[in-house]
Image (cartoon, rainbow, N blue to C red):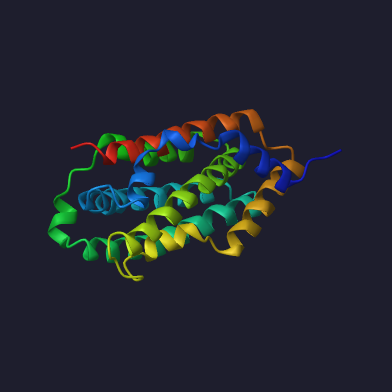
Length: 219
């Protein structure tokens, strides 16, 4: 029996779901135990992450031009990163950061490993495989954003406007789910999805995601 896009995605999310103990920083933020400076560093690092990921998604969309459902998935992600960049600017301002602070900040290698690998995927991965890798990773990222957004409100006193960056990723638009399924179904129907390779990409993305959070704790 042929597998559906939903089956493939659900299986990948289960296979790549990180151990809750692997990211102690998010529970610390949720409990209000992490220093406020961590949130400031997060805003600074995400300024670089989002800008880089937007370029990577645009490149993947271009490479997938012959596969419209796959290209549409990455175009949607690139458009979303533009909105996210606006939200991260609002977050940075709420953290008291100036434009000079943002442009003068030197990013941490561990925090930038994820976008660096995303850029590698944009250059070297088959776009259909990258769809599954990114889509599976978004499940964990969304959960982290949900926890941090709530903590920022209730533990750190940030406004809803300042938390919009986290809300954006915590509750992705229904259209993203539609485009994900359409892209994966196209890949399955055209037999262009290399599932083991996609899971390898997803495993590495998840590891770099955890590296991001771990690096935020560095002094």
